[in-house]
Image (cartoon, rainbow, N blue to C red):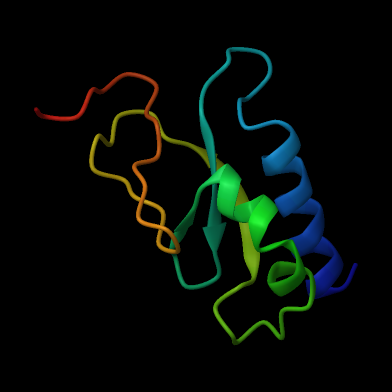
Length: 90
């Protein structure tokens, strides 16, 4: 599987199913450099993710559940990524 096809497969999976099954835990994408990607950006930036060179910052390498980090934000758009067990400080 090529870098582009794996990255695009993860982006499509995240945009179509932003919650883990079973359990319903919120998911986010992990970029090659460790950055976070929300489901909306995975969908909106599908072309960039699907044509990644692997060194341009758009390579998705995994999907993770945000268990307890109330301060996890998408590195592209800056929105808070929902966590399963923690609420943000008000």
